[in-house]
Image 1 (cartoon, rainbow, N blue to C red):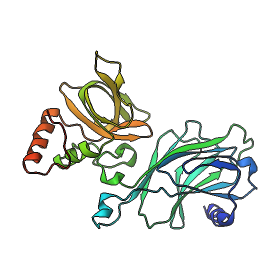
Image 2 (cartoon, rainbow, N blue to C red):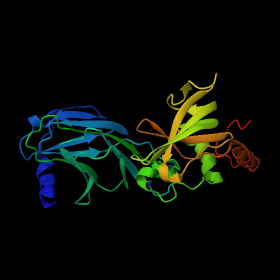
Image 3 (cartoon, helix red, strand yellow):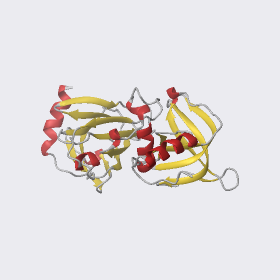
Image 4 (cartoon, helix red, strand yellow):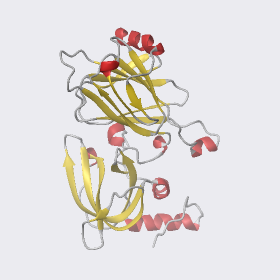
Length: 294
């Protein structure tokens, strides 16, 4: 561990080189690095990727997204925490990934990790970085350390954070009325429909809910497409396996967020319950946005 810290400090003055980068992603080769060097990188997007071919030496990656101000900041409250999630490629080899925080290093991804996302959070004033350390290899050929990342400044304020990954103990509890009303206004998708099927992935500890949509109120990307009953788009939504989701009759309002291109569930009230909640909020002028609750 002390050797890793020494490498971090030794690399502070290293020149950036040997890779191709834009504001969001970086791709480079360790073959162009000097032995024992640390290459300094900085990415400024809310999502992107890194691909390090033939890892040698180390990379120190600063994630500095230009996040929009959140409602909490606007109202003068304390700034929200920034949350990052890292998802390794299925063929991640040749390096280990550490979180560098306040002078310490925490292992995020060992060599050859399972393809699960790891998430962590920090306050905007904290100094954090990712430290990618090449592992000694007799043959570095066919070694590629690659991962995707996502950063959000408002995830912890949303009920739809992929809690299976963050380990939130309240991940499986039903949403309360306030969370449901906020979810219909701010989620990446809002779908009215029914459950077609539920399948479980024991390795990823996820349940995949097959949904037949009767109305697509919102979807940022084409998650639900034609393919089911005539005129009914179908799609899948993920949730933690430990929540024990089961198929059942009735119409639901599914809300949630995209996480590495996959739909994750936040709130899913029965539609008749949502109508009651929304109309009650309308009567007291407490609905945060207008929504067609027909």
